[in-house]
Image (cartoon, rainbow, N blue to C red; front, side, top):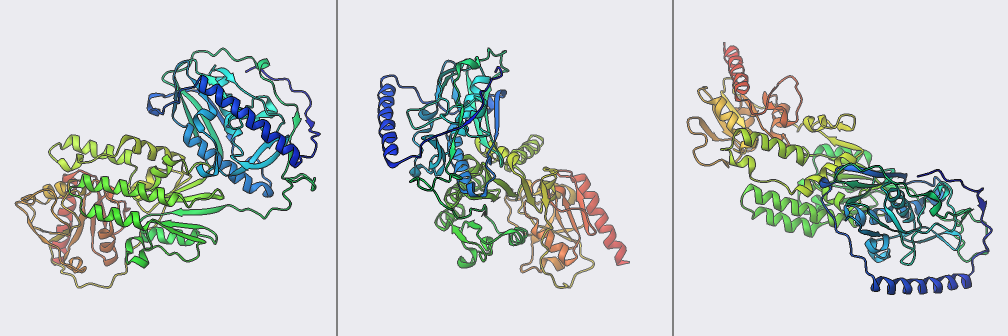
Amino acid sequence: MNSITRPELLQAETPIPTRRSGLVFAVKAAGLRLQRRWRDRAAPLPRLAHGDPRAYPALIAESVTPLWSDPRQSEARHQFGKVENLRRAAWHFDGLVLPADGVFSFWGQLGRPTRGRGFVPGRMLREGCLTAATGGGLCQISNALFAVALEADCAIVERHAHSRIVPGSAAALGRDATVAWNYVDLRFRAPRELMLRVSLSASSLIVQLRGRAAAMPARRNPSTLFRSATRIANDCGSCSAVTCHRHEGSLPRALGRSAFLLDEAWPEFRAYVRERKARGDLLAIPLDGRRWGKPRYAWETEGFAKVATASLASLAHSWAARHATGNGQRVAVQLRRSEAIARKLAKNLTPDMTEVCVAQSLLPFLWRMGVLGGRRVTVLMTRLPMAMLQARLDAFAAINPERATLADFRAPTTLVGAETEALAAADRIVTPHALIAAQFPGRAERLDWHLPASRPLPRKSQSRTIAFPGPTLARKGAHELRAAALGLDCEIALLGGDLEGAGFWHGLATRPAARDGAWLSEAAAVVQPALIEEQPRALLAALAAGVPVIASQACGIVARPGVTLVPEGDSAALRQALERLFQDIAHNRH
């Protein structure tokens, strides 16, 4: 766009608003809304549909603007409100497909911004003054849409300049487009099929127009077509006109808070949250594990301003999971549970919560809901990202097509994509799992695994029994262990059920492991050559008791005395490790 020559900006000499002037303004606005409604009924615009972002890889135009544009502490609550309104709008706009010659209408797609739809007070320009109003701050997104429409060579069908300039805004550059429900709209026509992407990072509003292929050189819209304001808006946040009926006086200070939206209470994560929570923060969990006698969800609730739960949804889906047959059904039930809990817990987020600590199981659903935008996000990760996890399973399934359990379930593509986007936008990744942490260099904080308390156990020094945490399943490394152990004079103690079918361990001496931890005293080593493992609790128990461990890197522990790591899927390397183990046992015997 050509440079814009701006006249000298003047401070607006606006008469002090009165109730009478406000009433006159409201009556005029109502009349204009009625006119707009009749015009739209006579020539309605079709609503745009959402599409698959993967079909629009080419970036055509982009606008990146700061969210937190007013550093004054007195304006913090209105900044929180503005960002919340932008979150709501972004959820409606993101992924819209504009067909060739299709017209985008700001209000036609968003609808009226009411409190009932989740919009909150923010600053809005009205009668020459920046005052608090529901839906305030949406002009930042209309400004950005106008900017990318110009850059993408869209035809501007309707655009209105602000009547006053907010210092530092797009209005100061003549690239603004104000909106007011529903009579002041922003409309533009796409020159070809485009997709609109709208998202919020922790600090910026990002608006893009994307295409199926790179854009042709644009015929830039001439800047002379667009009128702009020349006077600066009055600011109700700092106005000294105490006689004005809108005068706000001295507002209480507003400070940002943190929210913890959590799932399973791993001991490593309990310690992490305990160290970082602050008075005033929110704790939102599936259910109060200590109250319900569920150690899996036994988070420490003390010290939080509010503890929110989704007990009914959690218990209902737990019941469904227990009655599901097959691994694929169980995983599908778990995904439905996570979505139901995420929706319930997200209702407790308030605009002033600027930092969110999220369980990975809830992350993709919260991301699709749009509630994480404009917040610093920390993810407590319990497994590999779905895209990486499924790619790993696909690779092993291609090598071993006879192992049906390697390909029995895959998450929906849209869910995988949502998690991938959310993880890319997250500020920090927190996990005790070494393999997961390695996927996020520079952003990962690797916690120490929690070793359980252990007392000295009587051990059989001559034992040739190896414990397999199991269950007997391909992704837990059962096939590799079976191949490596054939021909070795050893016994396998099985801690989990047999899910690969009867006769799987034919030719090997196996038995169920002893209960109540006694299996550790009988084991020469604990062996887990898993392809995928989230919580290596049996390995940690072995390390705490001084029992040797042979495991794959997928188990998430690091090399240390007493730990032998082998590559995933490599039965030959596993056999060598077992042979060395038994050689050491024989050497110690003599």
